[in-house]
Image 1 (cartoon, rainbow, N blue to C red):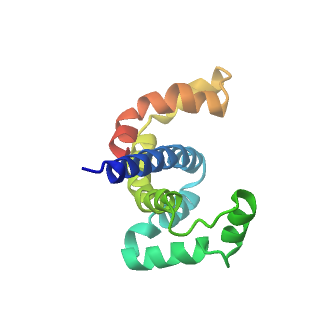
Image 2 (image 1 turned 90 degrees about the vertical axis):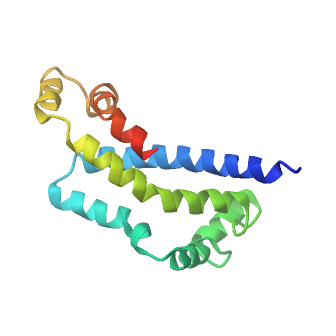
Length: 148
């Protein structure tokens, strides 16, 4: 029995999960610091992959990473190969498809954090980065774990 497809699937899933976790936490961290109006705009753009049919999403990803696109040309000039139909493209597609699920799960966890705790940390001189790592992440870990 050939185990190569299994290892390829595990590699794609692991890398996509890491990409979604890092980019999702960055976007959620940014979204919780802006006004409600901008937060709603973040939600709209973050959930677009959920409302698009998978064939349309796949087509747009092919267009974006094709060799004729700006991103495809840039990728080819840096790495020397095309991204289309590679395992790296599968990681990208999986990340794009999974991102809204993480975002929509983690965002409420961050929004449920009591603002007085954040304000108290600010009065104690904590930076936004310290507040994110020392207060927000530990308090929102259940939502983050659910999203992952």
